[in-house]
Image 1 (tube, helix red, strand yellow):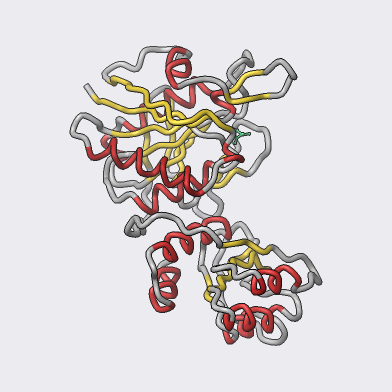
Image 2 (tube, helix red, strand yellow):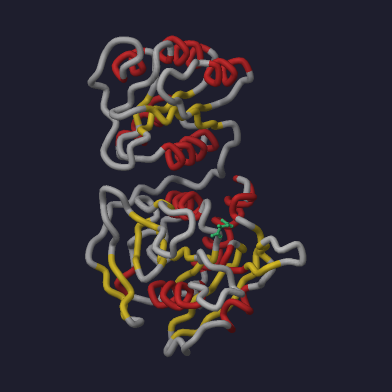
Length: 323
Ligand code: ASP
């Protein structure tokens, strides 16, 4: 018998309609498990209710608490894996932090729903059943944190929410999924390398600045003036930015901030190739560090973990070089 703990945190999967007709997360884990259509043969499920909130309202302190709760369950001999039910809006971030900070080989699987629990065609029960089966599967060992949704198995590192409402919202752009759950059978087709950091918590004060064509440097200058610790620029293409950004990056670095450059493209890597004002070569010369394949929201979490650990400039550069 495999023993899986389901940590419930809210989201659409735990939601129904309230008296004002809005959708609110008001259900506990036991109700989610009671809604499963079929028995999970050979798997015993225990529930740990943490919170019931929309994931758009989570903060880094609460997310780090979720990581600690998962780690605590994984340390126990009577726990073979953990499933986390979570809102889809920020699932890829909490799942990625979990992947980053937990080194255990036991499976951790995030899931949720796009259609709330009172809808006749809610996707929650099937997603939970699939997630529990993946968490109990020997083939899922050592894969890091996963997102299981609509029958697809994704690495947390690669997955993102791509559609606001469709049930097949999670995709792994540039990589593809790791496998599938088909009629309750878990199929793992491939693995991604893992990068685990020591867990020293998550530092506040790392912001994302996303320029558009011809944007001003106002937000970067605001960050420099207000003592922000780190800025991730969600830049164009290979990591290029609007005119004036290189000088603004130099001002930010002089003010003591770490500046990271990611790309708004869903696939591919950043790389300083273009010069001029403010091609990626100019940004690098001004002190910016490039993320490789990571999205801006995931790079922000890596930097937050590194700053919490007191990492120096060299350690930040070395960590992002792995991506
Ligand atoms: N739409 C979201 C969900 O799917 C709401 C949230 O992230 O909590 O759960």
